[in-house]
Length: 528
Image (tube, rainbow, N blue to C red; front, side, top):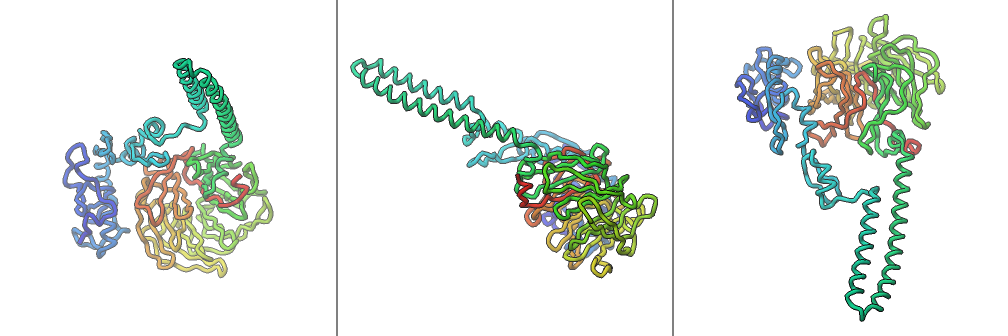
C-alpha cells in the first residue's frame, strides 16, 4: 500500500496554486497533488519522485498501482509529463506573504530564491521581527525601533551634539532674560554649564576622531585576501574548471563576510583536475590539456601559486587524488591518447616543487569521472565510467597497505560526474549523471553496511559540481545543469538538522569540473 500523503518527504504541487485547472492525469496517486519531478514504472504508472521513493523505502518494492516489481533504480523519468507541467503557471511559495507572481513551474525555484516576499529576520539586536526580504533595508535603517545610528555617520552625530549644545544655551538665555533679579545667579550658572558643555563637546569630538581613525584604518588595511584570512571558520577555496574564463581563476568563500573573494590565479589552465591538501599546501593535479601540478602554500602571504618542476608523464583528467595516512594516491582517469586508466599510482613529494609518480597496482576495471573518499585507512571508490557512456554502479574498497580490493554493495543505480563528501560513517554522493539525466539527488552510503539512504534533493540539478563538508554542513558549488549551463550557484545542507537545501551567495564565476577544498582551521598566519 502506498504511504499516506503526510508521510511523503516532499509531495507534489497543490492544485489550488495553479493559474488554471490542471488535468487529473498529471496528479500523483499517492499525494493527490500535481506531480513534482514525475517518475514512472515500466507500465507508465506515474508518481511524484519523492512520493514513490518514500513508498519504496517503507513498503515492499512494488508499484502501488500495478503491483509489478519496482525499485528506485528501475524508476524511469516521465519526461513528457514533466515537460508539460514545467510550462504551467503556478503562484509563488510566498503568495500568502503578498507575492502576486505566477511563473512557469520550471522557473519556480529560481523565482523563490530571489523573491522579495521571502521571510527574513531583522538583524538589529533585540528586534528579530520577521519581515519581507524587499523591506529589510528600510525596516532596519528607518522603521525599526532598535535601529542604530551607523558608527561612521560622524556628520549626523556632530550635528546632534551641536544642536543639543545650542538648545541648552538658548534655554539658559531665555531664563536669563525672564528674570532680571536672578541675572547674576543665571550668569554664574551659565558660565559653569557652558564650561561643562565645552568639556563634554571636546570629549565627544575626541571620541569621534578616534572612531573615524579606526574605521579608516580598517578600510585601508583590509584587502579582500586579508578579509578572507580574518575568518575564524573553515573557509572554502574553489579553483579552475570550465568555462575558459574560469579555468585559471580562484575564489575563497568567507563565512564571516558571507561573500566570495577572488585571489591569485593559477598559472596553468586546470579543468577536470583533482586536488588535495598535504603539509599545509593545496595541490592541483593535472586536468584536461594540462600536465602540471600547482601548489599553494597556506603558510605564506601573499598567496601565490607555484608550478612543480617537470611535467606529468601523461595528460590525465577525470581522475581522483586522495591522501591516506600521508600516502598520496592517484586513481584512474582518462589518459589522452590511451584508454581509460585502471592504475593506482603514488605521488611522492620530494621537495617544495618536485615529485615522483610511482605506479602501485591496477583496479579490477578502469574508471573515469568516479569519486573517491578516504575512510579510516581504506579508500572507497564509487561509480564512474568504465569506458565512454558505460556507467558503473559498483563500489570498491582499496587497502593501500596490502594493495588489495574488496567489492562493496553497489549504488542503487549507475552514477558518474558526482561530488562526494564523508560525514561520520557515511559517504554522501551529490548530483551527477545516471546515463539518462542530470540529477539533483543526494544519496547517503553507509560505509559499514553498504546501505543507501535518500536525503532531500538539492535545489538544482548538477553534474561536474564540487562539494566540501565543514563541520556538519555540506556545501555544493557550481557544476552543469540539465540545460548544459555552467552554474554560479552554491547551496548548503546541515546534516542532522536541515530538512531542505538553502542557497549561499553566488560565486563570481560560473564553474563546472572545478576543484574545491576546505581551508585548515586555526592557523595563526591565515587569520592575520
